[in-house]
Image (tube, rainbow, N blue to C red; front, side, top):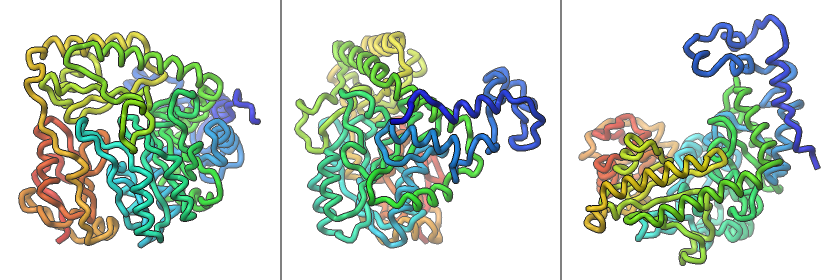
Length: 489
């Protein structure tokens, strides 16, 4: 057992920040002495003293032998891994590295169609061929859950030459599929199970949270420590266990896609966040779960509102075996509002900001940083919203298209081939039945509706335009107004 009280990287950064010396190395602001005063006024001086580069005592992210190595070993033990890598380019680079380390050009990888755009980037970088599996869809809530074990089994039977399976666990709504069963099926083919666990970094620290991916048998998992724990934005981790992942290939892949000038502020925040959870995680998560339960109970008492995602005992879908109770989804459609409209009102008028909105719902992340005052403001915000729109009760429900059913599966190019193909820009109305060269996704949460290599269909175009009309934001394409799209020429 390692001493989880230690923070070797944080301690080394603190010592070097305080060491008197004349700096003749990057960054150019020289520990804050050259920083704009307006930035100092916002952030203070201390943060810039610690904004250092790869000094001798601070180790090297790509060849760690000192404090970074020690900090990663502590993290591996705390999160239940055999080896851990710190990530400064977010979980995006972790997902990309996972695909690069397991798949080459022309190799098949099985993954859900509601995967994050980072996985599409991994396909483009690696040249891998996606074998998409539809997630289980809840038509009442208009929410896609996880892919099911039977769907994975069917995909592997049809494509026994696949090199890996990738699963999103949990979804953006906090829903977890049967990952243990998927791991068992995947390992029967002696290939690795890769998990995008970006929103599940807290699972290892409380028994009332879903089972962590590694404990379910995953070979590799990527976690956004910054999303739900106490690290700085972009600070994430990649963990592996077992023998199916080549750790050297992970290291080499990360060297391709991580910055060669990593922020030690981000790295130290990972060290500190790990220590915090190792020592206080159970207490912090107990408190967080209590806040989430208070919010859920009180919002369910407001006429016209509901929190429809509940425990597994009340759900009969095989793509839903557990729910992260710290993720709160509120249905607002019975007020005659879309999630986009309600989000704008809450944010601009009532001082409550959601993680993301969709056609019928708003989703909120309740984490260790939230307070009772936050929950009170959330409840009061929804109370005011419901009072303002109570006259609309049951009068109008937004017409929603099934996101999953709009997604295409007609492939003429691999994502990599289409991305690098000669393209032309056409008016949106003229792109139906053409091959897309862009990644187009409503954001957040960043799930692509179109990606390079896919045939553009009228249903997809209708869905994207509906998202825009409802107030959603389209990202990834060259023309964010969505008047045009790029297609293979």
